[in-house]
Amino acid sequence: MPFCPNPECPHVRKHGRAAAFVDGVAICTDCGSQLTEEEMFLEKEKKSGLSDLQKRIFYTLCMLAIFRMLAHIPAPGIYGEALDRFLADRGGAFLWADIFGLQRMTVFALGLMPYITASVAVEIIALFIRPFKSWRKSGYHGRVKLRQTALVLTLVLATAQGYGIAHGLAGMGDGRFVYDSGMGYRLFLVLTLATGTFILIGIADKITRKGIGHGISIIILASSAAGVLSGLSKLINMNDRHILHESPFEYVFLAAIISALLIAIIVIMERTSKRIGVKYEDGMSSSLSLKLTTAGIVPAEWAGFLIFMPTTIMGFINVGPLQEFARFLSPGTSTYSIIYALVIFFLYILFTSSFYRPKDMLSLLQHKGATLAVPIGKDPESYMDHILEIMAFVGAAYLCLLFFIPEILIRLGFPIFLGGMGLITTVAIVLDVLEEFRIRRNTNGMTKVMEFHEAYEAGLFKGILEQRGIPCILRGYYHRSLLYFFGPYIEISVLVPSDKCAEASELFERYIA
Image (cartoon, rainbow, N blue to C red; front, side, top):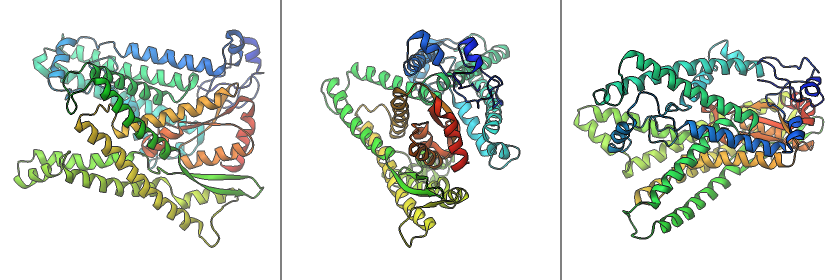
């Protein structure tokens, strides 16, 4: 829902709050200002005495508290204790409902996965099928249509997944986990689970608009924190030690040191970028920022999938050589680790060439009459290709390191509660939130003026704004950069001080659009 950012708007003077419009409207009918997707709190601030930042932090905490309370409501019609015992006896092997670190079947069992899956599917479709392809290139109005399509697909997926869970519960344990295994109950459970997903989407959207940080990222962060606290509580109450027969507090201390070292490595790698100077015809200068971790964590996710799927299939085929080969590549073996690392390197290079295309980046600059500052005698495209090749090898080695170290420590018995990929994601979200906190602390209200899907475009625009002395927030920059093409539900939003909206929009039209 877009809002009017003008504090002098007649609607603000009359009602004390920003005017809200339906999706698709771009201009305020009261004052003619360009609408943004973020509501302003300036008039409310004067009444409450709270700054914009304080109000947003408080709002975010309230939304998270509501989320955590709702996340403990059990799904209706289920014998919770019996199901908990059944899952616990099997080590959580059937915990499809354990999306948010909960050990029970709740109304949020589906979590945000239907929405995330739908968003990725729509993004893929938009590359090949019209009119989705034209929507993807038509700015704000196109993004609204794509999001509406993703929400419809979310409903379809949530209904299908919810029915799968309802059917599975009704048939599991001869129906002893549910009060009623009939069709009426199944449809009611489907409705409940689908509603839970849309409640989560609504909470995430509210946090994005009125809180601090990207809503989905904040919910993921809160869920990770809940999982760590749960694991820490279990550790303190443990009696059986795997490697050292010492106090659990010594385990916690060792885990804290190891985690701090890993986090330090992640922060350094995620914040490091190669900046190549850019010069425009009118004298404006900026820089093209190429993140060192060029392909994010996508290669590690795909590597596991590409190895796991064929070996799993071969394991079910009753043919001696195939089953032997499946055991040869099973997790925990040295062969698996070597092949996994090789696949990560291959995919990292492949995805880097897909996400960062020098020809497209140079075309973007040349369209606006800009030139790239490269060493004398070097071809710009070849120079960028060479830089990206080096960065891809460094990024792949970093990804392997962050995957294998936590895995090894967990097998040795150290209490590491987040895997390497989970730790990278958590740190990236925290970096986004800290960056937004730092900027908002020194301004009196920020307004969203633009959003990007490509990290290098967002970095280029940020450099231009900073050249003009306009502070800005790239909300979701680090988290989106981890996922790239497979994280379209996390856009990179550009927020600037409310009184700089017009100037920032003009700079975008002149140097980027």
